[in-house]
Length: 260
Length: 340
Image 1: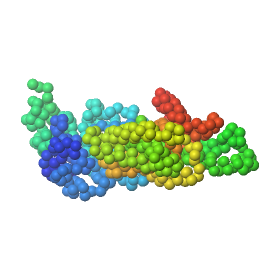
Image 2 (image 1 turned 30 degrees about the vertical axis):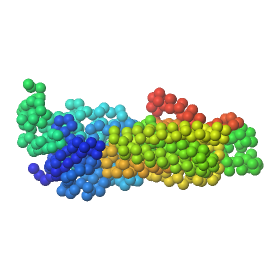
Image 3 (image 1 turned 135 degrees about the vertical axis):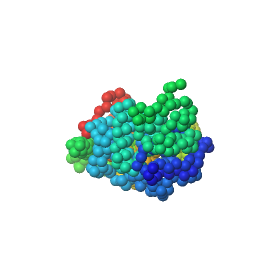
């Protein structure tokens, strides 16, 4: 595997209001220029891990390195240009147009008092084009389906022109067509050298795109490695504590979880 | 795609054109309101009447002009503070009454009337101080609440602090002399601009100017600070610090105007809705639109307050009446939006 973009070094974390450790001595190294998928049962600490990677949460002990540099050595706006975040669901209460919403992704390139320029507008439209929504740039975001909204959030992350995109459960609201579209977009990102870290509850989706898998459980890395190393019947079975079988269909790995 | 950009640019220009139109309408409304009144006869005064009558001129320059300017600042401040609160709490149904600001100011005013005398400047100052105390208490309490996310914690703290001030106000009303102090407290709570002279207008101008200028400068940034904590953070902002700055500015302007005008409700709730319906959610246009519409709305209400009857109608009653009526219409009608 090539060099690491993001390294977790013995990271422990608990929320200030709750002393239960969410992550405990987690050590992890995610490869650059690849899609890494984080799999784990509900409550395993996947979203917390993403928020730590973002710098939004600070670990009580351990270090997180981005490009070999500690996260806290980056300035706020600099981090905004390194990462794009695609949250699982974002509460939107106001009728923004898609373009206005995607344009917010330009913030890391503007000082607090600067207004976006025509050039920023151009980039935002281009990002909307990449997710296939450019024709609807002036439509209200509240009129979109959950899946289309997810694509708008991805466009907002793209407009940040980051080297790494963090996605929290990107497939949660997507139908099959949109899932396929997301897969195509991820391939385009890979071809441009953008790294992606995503959490997912769908092992099949992870197997379809990720080249590096991290299985976490109870705040610890249960298993991490390439798809071939980690995506086996035994390991997925013990991760989810339910009997599953990995089957090969036309060279693709799929999870058969309904078999007895 | 270039067609789309051009279309988009044209749309923005149209919207900006509407904004300038709104500013023009506000100037015209201001001019008409200056000439409207009950002296020498009810209705509009002509310019020749104004020139020929020294008393009319003095009335015009020393009473109506500062009063209308204050009315304009009042509407602008309440409307922009309302928009800022709604955006930062990601909740279109709140106004500066949250976070203990209004109740704090009301308690402060009553406290001053009962214990420190009813000197206008003192009432104003104490009301402003307690409005800020309300915000600070809400903020400090929110940090200690061990339930929910930051926004929910702030709102819960605001409700608790408001209730505290409100019960304190009840005690003060009970203690107040029913013949002298109580009517004064009641009148202040109803809201009005009848006592405004130049000195009072000038006393609030710096706070309002600073508050509104900062909000105006940060208007695009507001859109980002309206996102969730992690999303705003991922876009390179320091959400908590920047939100606190903007909330403080909104409260500063609100506390200043409330301290001279008393409790004037509904402007902060209804005007931002109107502005967003007309200009879209992006605060680059919605914030200046809310300022202009808010200024116009309170000039209109105040002019009616002083001209409809021979005695003055409390401003808060009129804004509540028109505000509630507009609210019902807005909430039940299909969305209207200017061509963008």
